[in-house]
Image (cartoon, rainbow, N blue to C red; front, side, top):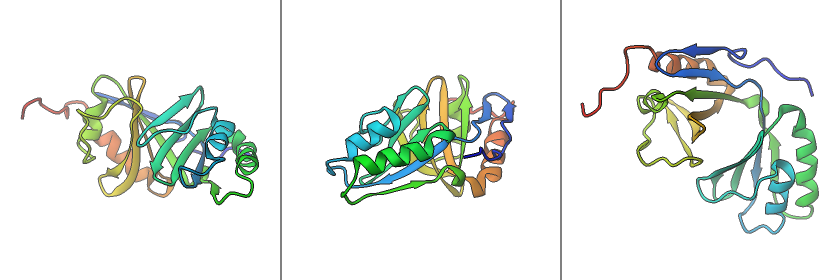
Length: 186
């Protein structure tokens, strides 16, 4: 599988926080009830991660497994490994009701980093960032579009639909403009 061109071509913006395009990542949406017997093995086979708990994302190197809803998981892995992961999921879930779909080309992924990275997102998302824990995955909105975020390693990862990647990039870079930091207590 050849890698697509990413929405920002790997570009980054440096304001009071840094906004980076993470480039093409492999992503699989896995739908199955949480109590499906083969589900933990399928997630493990595809990502090396355990089945994540509610609103959690677990990481194993370049792979991750995130809880998106009671019957939906987001699996993140290197782009070139998606077809192998789908085969591993099919093997682990054989005969069990599930849906595993490659959504890699339908998603864009951004990193927002730096000590004030949360301020970039506070302006855009109705999320209580004071209570957002590391490795807690939240589905929300970035201005007018659906997005998922999680905090890890000095910043945040944001996933959105590729069709709105340019819009989201504009939101993030505008929100990170130097001089536009939030004033505490105001």
